[in-house]
Image (cartoon, rainbow, N blue to C red; front, side):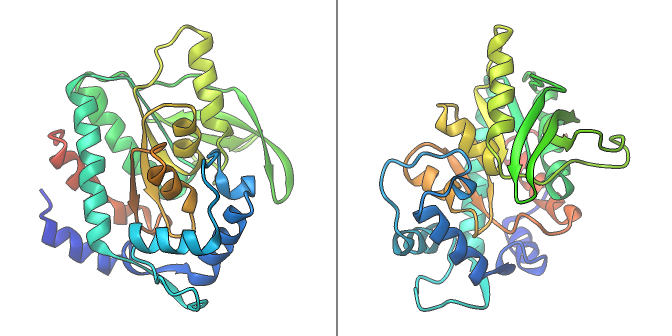
Length: 271
């Protein structure tokens, strides 16, 4: 069991919150691109209102704790650990509710090298609680536009967690998957589930396009997001995404283990 105080200390020590590795420059670039409705940054979200860069700075200051000063244009971003804790509590409550009603769930990540273990532990616990952990469209091709051009990936599942691998990638034992922000993998998975008559997920858990893509299609979606991923927080503000936990999503994978224990304990899924 991880206490709130111990988790807060860990968040700061591991730089999951507090001063994080994400630069202010990277975040502001994402805000500018989102304001211009660049699909690479909207990652599946179709916002209702027009979000200018200043609007996004104010939103991210409110949801994450970054500087609200538009003249702050350099340095490292800051995430308020209290906002991370609050987000984790809401996230855990949604996971617990899904477990109580034995809801079918879909988990997916665009950060498999960092977050696979976090989601896999949730998948194991939800499965043990009687939830169907869905793996639709396994092996299906997904064509994603990257900065290197159009690349073909395959949808795969590891311990119940969806990810994509480049076509012809090494075996799963040697390669954990590709980093992606695209909503196309979750759209492919959901379409695959619908094609065979379901079941469809009652909760989608993940990050990046997995959350925004699912939420935009009307599925309840919760996830994790860094300060340079404004789409998830805009989705939360507009009611498309249920819960977003602000934290650095690219630290060492073992640094997320205390968060896993905290979420599972609060969700009454500790084993």
